[in-house]
Length: 121
Image 1 (cartoon, rainbow, N blue to C red):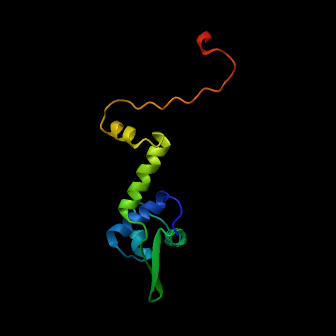
Image 2: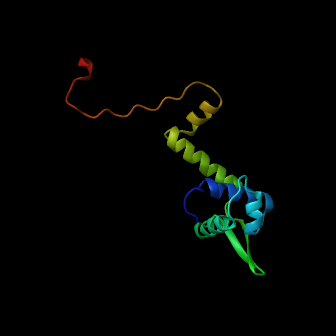
Image 3: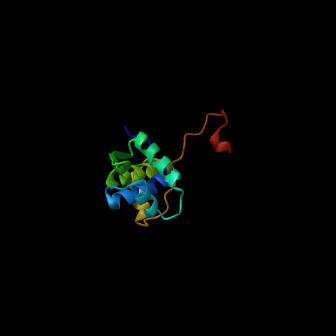
């Protein structure tokens, strides 16, 4: 059962696993763009396993990890989140923005009724 979008460090671990398909904690750690303690990577992978972002299996005395979230699904979720947060879930507005077809303005929200005539303001 997957919950939520991956955090930054989780995404870094997933990128390593998308390339290597299956890796030990030491292999994931070696593939990360920044140096982290072995125990930090082990803890992150363990938490990712609980979230369903990675899967693990025992290989000898160590665990071997593989991505439980594929790249295309991660991209789709990230785009949906971007559209929801910055484009009011209007994916067409996001595409227009990416194509450079003009600034995207947020939709006007209904003004709270204050009893004051808008024409007077």
